[in-house]
Length: 308
Image 1 (tube, rainbow, N blue to C red):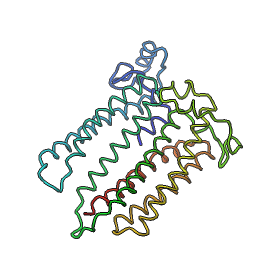
Image 2 (image 1 turned 135 degrees about the vertical axis):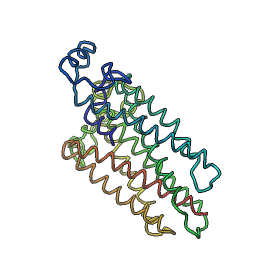
Image 3 (image 1 turned 30 degrees about the vertical axis):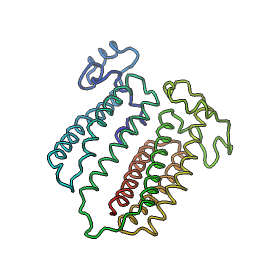
Image 4 (image 1 turned 45 degrees about the horizontal axis):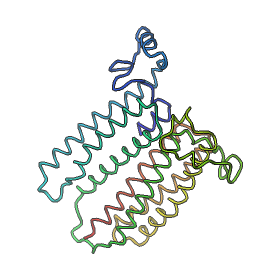
C-alpha cells in the first residue's frame, strides 16, 4: 500500500539518489538545506512532501527485514516441528533482498516500467508468502478430508490468473496508461479505438510518463488490463463460485466467497476510478483490494493443500 501511495502521488523520484535523499539520511527541510540540495541536484528540485513519502517507504524495508530475519531464525530453530513453516520464511530473506535492489533500480533507472512492475510483483509475492505462513501456523482440523488433486489445480489456476491481472494493472500504472480510456464501457467514446499492442507491451521501454509510449500504446495497455479483468472475472470468479457453493469444508467455502466479493468490488472500483478521473484514494484502494485478492487466493490454495 505504501508503495502504491508513493507511485500514485508521483513520489517515486522524490529522492533522486539512493539510499539517501539528496545525499542525506532524511529529506532536506530547512531553506538552507533545500537550497544546497537544489544546487547539488539541479535536475531534481526538492519537493519535501514527495521526498518524505519516498523515504518513509524506504525506511519500511529495514523494519520488514528485521521481521523476516527473525521469522527465518525461528524457522531454523523449530525446523523439526512439523506444525511450523520452514521454507516460506527462508524464501522471504532473498526475496526481501531482491526487493531492496529493485527499489534502488527504480530510482537509478528513472522509474523504468519493467522495474516498477517487478518491484510490485515482488511485494505481492512477499505478501503471499507471509499469508501462507500465517495459515500454516493455524491449528489443523482433527479430521482432514481426502486430497483432491483436481481442486488443487484449479485453486492454483485462480491464483495465477489473479497474479497475471495484478501484473497487467502494474504495467498500466507504470506506463501512466490508467487515463488512456477516460470513459466506460467504451474507450475514447469507441468500442475499439486505435491501439498499438506491439508497442504497448515492449518490456524494456523508457519512463512511462515521458518515455517512448505514445497514446495508441497506452490505449493498448489500458485495453489489455480491461480484457484481463474480464478473463479474471470469468476464470477466477468461476472457480471461486464453485468453491463457495460446493467446497468440502468451511475454509474452502469462505475463501471462494471472499474471492467473489473482492472480484466484484474490484471491478466496480476500477470502473469508478475511470469515470471519476483517477482519484488518489480510489487508486490506492484499487491496489489494496488487489492485495486482498491475492491473500484470498492464497487462502483457497491453503484449503486445497491441507486436505490430506
